[in-house]
Image 1 (tube, helix red, strand yellow):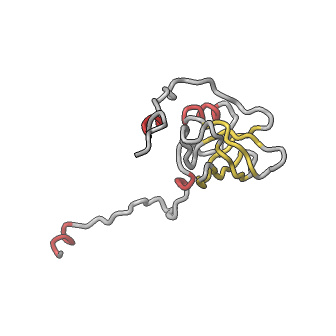
Image 2 (image 1 turned 45 degrees about the vertical axis):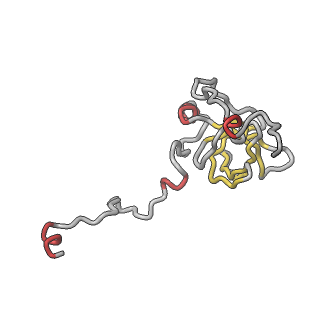
Image 3 (image 1 turned 90 degrees about the horizontal axis):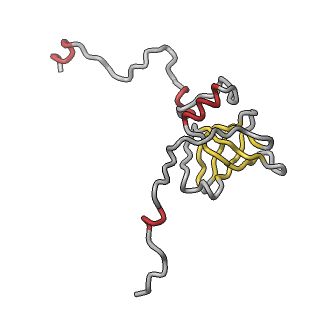
Length: 145
């Protein structure tokens, strides 16, 4: 049997929850940065995001955020634009839902941006407003069965 040469196992790598819920200062974009909304996760530390300037970019999640900050489709992120590749960017920061609402209130995000819901949430096949996916039976119908 080989000796264990590490400092611990899986639980050590998970670490303690470092109180990420505490209030942090709201970070605004600078030059060379842009706000974006995640369209879909691609795996391998990458995601596809629609930037506020209207460009769809392939974004790389930086190592500091990798496995520590979970990014999902619909999240608002701050990306750093690349000088040499316009179709690629680097994820700098993920905004919490309350921070994204503040950005929208300050006018940093356009009013058309949909917050705190997935990208597919607004796409409904039925536009007639019924929205019922179940069938109602009358008492007479139940007696026939």
